View 1 (tube, rainbow, N blue to C red):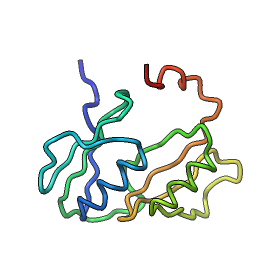
View 2 (cartoon, rainbow, N blue to C red; view 1 turned 135 degrees about the horizontal axis):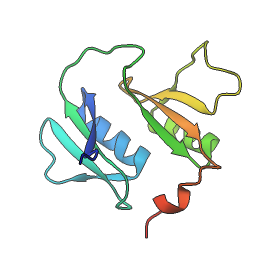
View 3 (tube, rainbow, N blue to C red; view 1 turned 90 degrees about the vertical axis):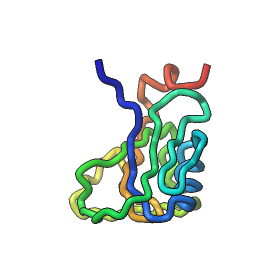
Length: 128
């Protein structure tokens, strides 16, 4: 059996990215935070870990993998993420009726914010 233990994001500035992703996802660092690596865990106790690896790597666009972040209020979450330092990515092939907004963190790591207001999994994802 396999389970996803952590999703790893390569970063340049570990401290800045630690602050962004903790605020964006409502996660906290699992101690100890190393000089070049941190594991973030959900404050609510549910969901995958996200690890930040301060390792130089080439940025490839479009990325081969990205996070889809489900939002129960997509416009509010997109605005909150902007205030934290994320930017919206304009893509000319995005359908007019798309349920996602493409964004990137302060270092350019891309993710999508999905309009999931009608998602049936909200109850099972809430803290107990």
